[in-house]
Amino acid sequence: EISQLMEFHHLVDPISKGKRVISIDNHPINSNIVAISLCTHSSFEERLWKSIDEQQSHLLMYDIKQHISPLLAILKSPVECPVFRFNPTMPKLAVGGLVNGEVALFQIPSELTNSMKPTFDNHISPDVISSPESSHRQMVSDILWLPPGIQLNSKGRLVQESHLTDVSHQFISCSGDGIILVWDVRARDIAMGKLPFIARPKQLMKKDDKSLKWVPIFRVRVKHFDSSSAIPLCKMMKKSLEDGNLLCSATSGDLVSVKMLADVVTSTPFSDGERARPETAQIDATREVVNWIRRDHYRPALTLEQSPFLPELFVSVGDSNFNIWSRTCEDEPVFSSPNMYIAKYTGGKWSPTRAGILYLSTTDGKVQIWNFEEGDLIKPSMICSVAALSIETMEYIVCNDKEHFLVIGDSNGSLRVVAVPISFVTEATTSTDTIRSNFVSASCLSS
Image (cartoon, rainbow, N blue to C red; front, side, top):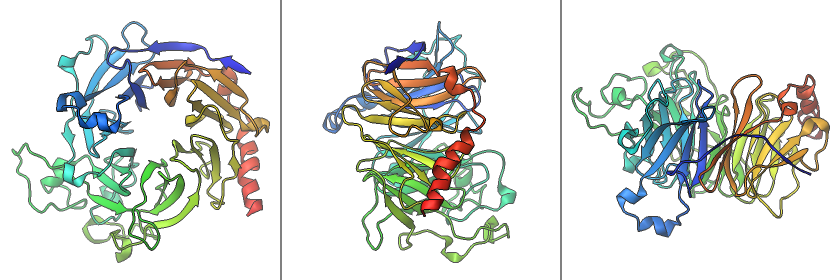
């Protein structure tokens, strides 16, 4: 049975019309604000023939609860920006991953209002763009901000805790070139020699020098076992780096566990303000960084997300089906959905209030709501028609206790804000216990 979700807002701008909404990110402080990234329907060959001006792209920032003038800002990118992420601790900073492999850092105004309508004359351009020769060789496929408690230096070692603050300064990016890059937004301070515990520049930059060569502070080459061939990456799982291992999805559909840090982490001081660890902590081209590889999908994963209630559970969404994995049993998924044959999946999101609710978007403009608390593991509990076109991306936003929205971008540049049914918002008292019993405990028994 197909239901209809109540549409709260429908946003479309002349800039976005006819383009794909390929990325949505929510402001970490003001939950009413979202930023969307746009891409054309051009093929690779068509992009090659475009001029520099034609390659420029835009990102739009909206206030989803403002109906009269919702557009807050226009961000300008030199090329298309398929990935965009706000800094979770400093929202005035945002980073975009570009199709040419570079990353761009944006300075967002602290106070965003719709009092002055954004135009092309007052758009926001990148504050700094990474050096092309030091960036990825292929499109940036995913970006993750490192939490404040984790900082790496140029040797791949953890920075001593005395140098840490409650602010995120670093992020990692991945690409189809099989390389994970670690970036630091304090590039100018590093170049001027102010942060020797992060990196020591070969030549100090003068204070009045306006030129800045932004390069990654560290890189990890992800290769197949006993082979020099790279593993192309498309997704990284947030919060999976806390144990030193980063969980990624390869373009082949495999799950890959990457060792980013050393095996032992202590707080004993090491050289240059590092935390003590073996000399093998430096990850280079000769070191095996892949812990394991597991078959997940036969095509690239579209979503790789950890459960907000049970950290040991995570979901990977492919175009044909989705799998739920348990980190207590990593040999095979604890649940695999039936295959989709007519329409395909385009992404998925866990519910932030119910441990057993999963939302999935499809190419026929529908949203599937799976409720694992009811014990029905064969079909979704509800299928909701949202758009007439393919849903390209979806984000779950909590404005307050009663207002929960799915922000959905389609293939024609429209942004739809639909209300989540109240029955799926109210927290169930036994939901976490039910899911742990169904998936986590079952996986332990089977192993």
